[in-house]
Length: 317
Length: 139
Image 1 (cartoon, one colour):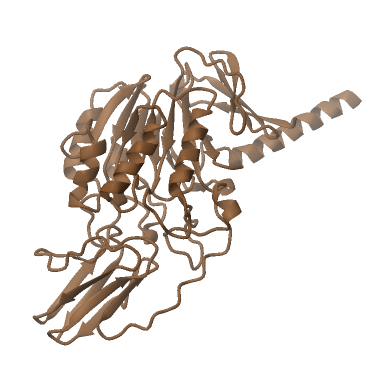
Image 2 (cartoon, each protein chain N blue to C red):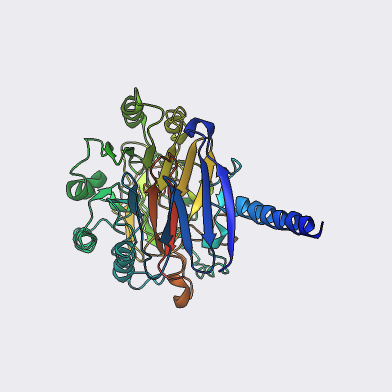
């Protein structure tokens, strides 16, 4: 097996720990060294024997399931969602919970919410939802919040703590302004500021938002108008991970202690920003390629490491 | 000596490999510019644009995340129809209150119509994709 190694010094504020990762290209195995004990995480196929350390915290992310989509880009979004959930069920480490970063449904129809809820129940995991713009087409998202927003506050945004991580779940798909992008609004920003105030800078933070919190492609509407203000509240924290959806592909930006990352969809791919002649809508690819562009994400907080490992897994290699 | 050369060579290989990984590895400290995960990106040729529809004087066609024509000029009393030929849902929503134009979400193939009884400039946008904007000028 061909192996290469990468040694990376974690930021000085993060206890100066040396993080070593061995990437086994042939087997698709990611080894993480946590608490001095290496362990293997299989990225595809059969699970390896895993020895998670106590104190490790793993959760899963799925996004843009678009239940109800009926276009040529995917004739069976229910089937690909089920396949995605199977992928998550086969992870060597069972996630403590799952986050869904929006566009659960395609057209906010009651029957789409029904189907999505039934399918997602199959994961057997606690799921934290935020809406995408496809979930809020009717009555400012009332049907979505009634079904998936039990934990949400009045504006739809909320926060919670799990596994030593503080999660901030935002809504940036409502009250969109003409000519603009995603939008958080002053009320939500004030809430976020006060939610983070007084927290220890060493607390790992995960921010969930459907539309990217950085200008991935403003001409395609892929960004959030007032994201810079939200990110300014996070500057004092040593480990901040922003998980977005919306763009149906993995795009990443790292800025200081903040890692921003969009996720694959389980329903259909979209073109890369700037692709000549393309639009930001569903991208039809040859049938045999579809599942190589759909996927799920696993996020691992390894004991004694502030920064998580983020592993994206395609439905098919 | 021979052994030393070998070791230096080995270190060089590791360094080169590590450099390549630094460029690729998603968890690395990357430059501020957006770093694309090329392994995940779709590289195929773009889907051919749908056949261009020649709009009638009172029709706006929604396609490729655009209102076409973006500016439509009609006489007072004209019933304007928007048809969504796109693969994504869109709305026709007035930019200013009161929202004269407030369509339901238009799925692929759906239409929405509104009759303009007064002259004026009516700006609208898609409330789902707010970068999509259009104007109806009623004379």
